[in-house]
Length: 635
Image (cartoon, rainbow, N blue to C red):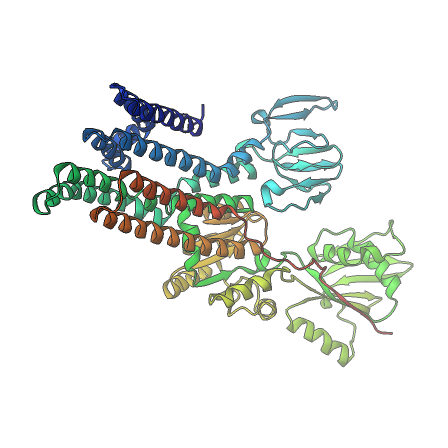
C-alpha cells in the first residue's frame, strides 16, 4: 500500500472513531474516552512517530510533536472530543499534503513508466529476439515496430518514420527522421517499423539522464526552503518555551482558572505551529521542477530555479546557441548561364560532405533540372572542387581558386559588402570566368532575437561571447541587438569575462553548448547548456534545455518569477494567519477546534497555491518561416 493510501486510511479510521466517541458521549456511555483514544492513536501515530524519529536522529524539533502534545494536553483536561478533532484535522491535512506533494512528482513517475523494459534484438539472419533493455550493448541492431517506444538511444539505420518526442523535448509536434539520424529512448515510433543501432548504454541514455537529474533536483531544496527548515527548529523551541508562560502568566496574574489557562496553552500549541510556513516553499518548488521537466527544461536543484528570478546579466555563446550552428545560403548571384551552372554546381556538391556544400544542396536541390552522375570531381585542399565536362573546367570554392579572373568594380563592391557582413563568399567559375557567387552565414535561430528582446525589456544585460572572428560575430550581434559583444575569445577568456560579469552584476547566466563553453558554464552563477550540445557542457551546467530552444529559457525565467511570487504569497499569508490566531487565542476569541481549522486550513491553502506552479507558462510563437535567401540573376 502506498504512503498516500495509508494516510487516507488512517484519516478515515480517525474520523470513524471520533464520530463513535461523540455518539457514545452523548448517550452517556462511561467508556466513550476509549473511542477517542483509538481515534487519536490511528490519526496521530504516523506523524508522532516521524516527529520523534526526526528529533532523536537529527536533533531537530518537529512541528508534528507540537500537534501530539496539544492533543494529549486536551485529553488531560477532559476535552476528549477536541483532542480527537485536532488529531483528525491534522491527519487530514497530512494526507492532503502527501497527495499534493505526490502530484508534483507524478510527472517524473510517468516518465519512469515510459521507459521500455524490453527490446527486439536483430541477429545476422534478420530474426528477432525479445531481450531486456539492460542487456543491450553498443552496436546491437534492433527492430522498432510501428507504435512502439524506442527502447534505448541509437541511430536509425533502415527506414524512415515519424517520432513523438514529447517525453524528451516537451514538443507535441512529431518529428520526421531518416537514415543516420539520432533516436532517443522513450520516444514513440508513429510510422512504419524501422531498424536502429544502439549507441548508448541503458544508464547513459538521454531519457535516463533526464529522470536522474530531475530526481536529484527534487531532493535538492531551494535557499528559501533550507532557510525555513532551519527556522522551524528554532521556532518550535520558542513555542515550547512560550507554552508554559502562556499557562502560568494568565493563571498567576490575570485571574484565569487553571483549566482555562491550560486550555489556552494547548490552543497556542496548535495555532503557533509553523506548518503553513514550512509548506510555503517546498511543494511549490517541486511543482515548478516537474513543470520544467515536462516542458523540456532540467533544473539540477531548486536553488538554481529560485536564483533565476534575480537574474541581472546573461551571456550567450554564438554558434549552436544563438545561431543554428550550420551555414545557410543568404545570397546567390548568377552572372550568366544560371541553369547550366546550377546543375553542375549541385552535381559537384553532392560529392562533398563539407558544411558549405550541404548548405548549397539544401538551398538549391529542388531546382536541379539535370543530374551529372558520372562526373569526376577533384578536391583541391584549401581551395575547393574542380571538374571537367566537355573540355570545360568548372570550379567551386574560394576566390583564390580563381585568381586569374577579373571582376567589375560594382560586383567587387557587392562581394566586399557580403564579407563585411561577416558572410563566407564562394564562387562558381567556368574556364576561369566567374559566373556566380554565393554568400553563406550561420544565421540566428528564429527565436533568438525575441528571447534577447525579452531579457532586455526585463532590464537584464545581454552579451554575446564567441570564439568566432570579429566580422561574423558583429553581423550576428547587430541583427540580434545584444548589449555587448566579445569575439575571438578562447575558453579561458570566456571564463574570465563570466567571472567579471558575476562580480559586477551578481546573478548571471552563461548559455552554451560546446566543450569550450564548459569552464564558463561552471563559473557563472547559473550555467545553462543546450541539450543537443556536448555531454561535458550538460554535466557542468545547472540548467539544461533538452531541445535547443532558447524560448525555453524565457519560459524558465517566467517560471522562476512566478515561483518567487507564490512563495512570497505563501510566507506572507501563513505569517499573518499565525499572528492572528495567536492574538485571537490570547483574547479568548477562538477555541481549540477553530484554532485547528484555521491552522490546518491555512496549511492546505498554501500547498494548493504552490500547486499552481504545475500550470505551464505558454510562450507565443509566430508561424515558422524558412530563412529567405535572396537570389539575383544578372545577364
